[in-house]
Image 1 (spheres, one colour):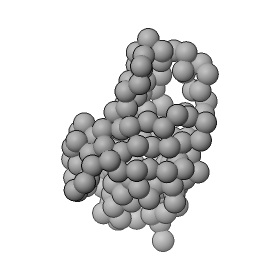
Image 2: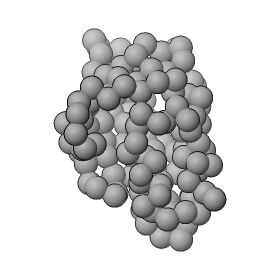
Image 3: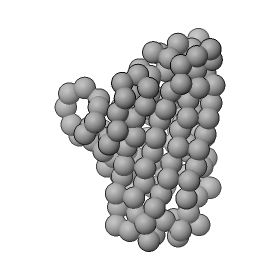
Length: 137
């Protein structure tokens, strides 16, 4: 299963990035996330872990596996039978382009796609829309 949303945001790339990497404040931007708890101290970056709580999904621990300051980060959540990879990428410009993508693999991925694929797609779209609304003046 793979979902991708691209949104254009009329705000400085630095503003968008600050909101994107401040994961604990994501619940302020979207109803698709109820709580995010950072599990590691220090600046957000490769190796950072956070527990993300979403409506109608079990809480998941995400670990940042790729990080390019000001541009992108990817994090991964592993559960029995499935690996979920979420990427967040900013392309500076006027407007800024943001790409959010979610991919799930593993033996349970087809079943999860069948049962919750529509909700996952809706959540990614809600997160993109919330980032746009929070970023723009």
